[in-house]
Length: 294
Image 1 (cartoon, one colour):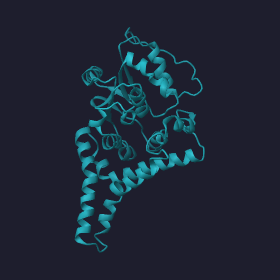
Image 2 (cartoon, helix red, strand yellow):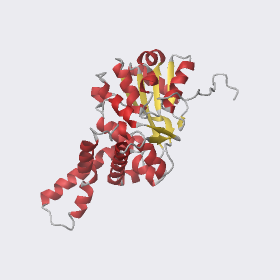
Image 3 (cartoon, helix red, strand yellow):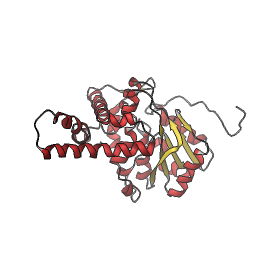
Image 4 (cartoon, one colour):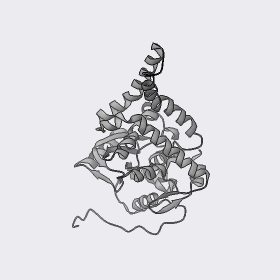
């Protein structure tokens, strides 16, 4: 309470067309005086020297905006099924090498829980004002920077911060559903994503188990076994690297199936015109989809 370096400001009323988080972040940018902005979600806890380490990565990366993925705390089974897939989706779908050698917006991705940016580049890119109606700043903010010609990067923030996003199955579902239409649930992505994930991650294990009672050739069984190993290998590596629950690894096919159900639920709500709901606010998805080019 007595630290003069800390100031608390009350956010002004939310203007039409703005998402609450983006408006709060844009307001903070107008009030801040430093050369570096560090944006943290309210449920993120920073480790000692965590901010300094994050800023050091920003300096070393030569990027204008960097995003870190904190250590994800997942206690309940519903959390452990879905939360660890944040790492899996980002590292599985984003070509990091290509991302670091190109500023094309399609390679822009991050984790909305933790962003670090140079203040001048934030203002030049337009910052959160550029994504004012989005619920998916993890993807949209890096793409806004890249559209302005700035580089962005991603780093492992396991030793920098921790985050427990949700605390129940309902919160997990609503939390992932709220911005799914701006990501994997978009009309142009959901079908190929579903086919890819069902064939590569969900079906191989139950098919292999079924092969123990249903006649199948030796090579058929070996093909299924190889598919299971290929699906589990990234999850095992992620569990070792990012301190994830081994239960979440064992239940990986179920977790991916739940993730797909969330995507289809989000798409269905969008198709029938139901707005996304978050923090007691409703957000229309039509404008978001149009602006994202999806």
